[in-house]
Length: 316
Image 1 (cartoon, rainbow, N blue to C red):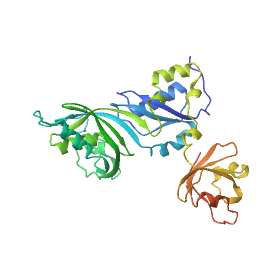
Image 2 (cartoon, rainbow, N blue to C red):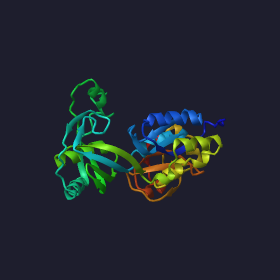
Image 3 (cartoon, one colour):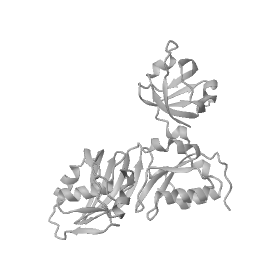
Image 4 (cartoon, one colour):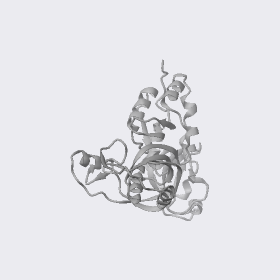
């Protein structure tokens, strides 16, 4: 029998998503398991992709948008010689090239050419919005629409294994990168076409497989009443972000969005520059707001300053 949890249950749960499930499916299962409505995720994984999905519970849903900024790492298998309309194995085959006269050196050189800053066209079957509609809605209606290219950054890309027509890659990339598009583009550059055969997300920011739990493990932990032991507090998730500790009077009014002046600041933790993202903490060192610093950390303690110090992005 599942134990009833308090609505104050809050933090980050690193989930190992299995294939054949949408990211939304995972969230719905967690809601039923944990008897908690306030759950979201940071960074969608396609149904046929597995790996790390960050689930945000309770107050942590308010930081989900910031977690999507993390770089991601993937292990992907692409299949050369077959092009599909979705850029993965679920789509309709639109071109086949059986006679692959490609050497392993050509594959490695071509894959390596994608390292760095590149422009990428998202797949037509994707949830990106164009003129108020998601791209896959145009695709399903048989309508053609121009897709805007997006600048992304491939920090590192390595060939792990070649067993033609299959090529296994490890990709470390920025937010917004479509590995399906990368597979398609590699095939185009090789002149044979390609699609994404399988995908596993192996890292999101600092979170790796060793931090992740599959849904069966989460259900067991919940039934034992130990789920809180596996939640990562907001303060730990955002530990790398500089912060400002404010006095009790200011912290109590935080939901009103009061202007922050030096007289309300107790201390700063870690130096920061103007326009940098920072956290506001109360005296218990709990994060109560996120936003942009309007001056460097030194200015937050300068009683002579009369202008506001902080621009709110999110009250926690």
